[in-house]
Image (cartoon, rainbow, N blue to C red; front, top):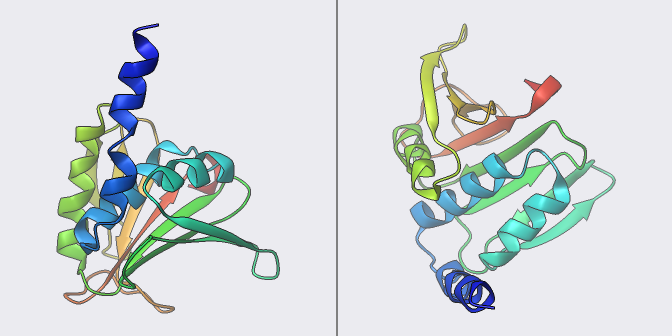
Length: 160
């Protein structure tokens, strides 16, 4: 009986946090949902929903799109089958994205184990749950670093 009120108490503030238009906080929300969602759309939809994000499946493009409750600087999308989950900022660069990725450890469920540079010169982080995150610029033709935008793509299992 005591657990239910405690759980409600812990989850109750989350929707309030979702209305935060700060792109840094929105990236942390997206990173957490993707990293812990195991590449499963339903788990990721549920997690982002707790933060007030909306989702819409685009069957033509073969992705599920996510948008935070407020602001336009952050968005996410993922394959509806396990493969990848991508979180992008149009206002925060790759150095900030890497810094915010480190905040995953505050979830108490996953953290960054290692970071390295891949063959293209992009930063790759391996998380404690085996998920691999690649940090690039945002946009359709990403490069490895950008001061103005970023994209972090999480790969699961065989999608790595």
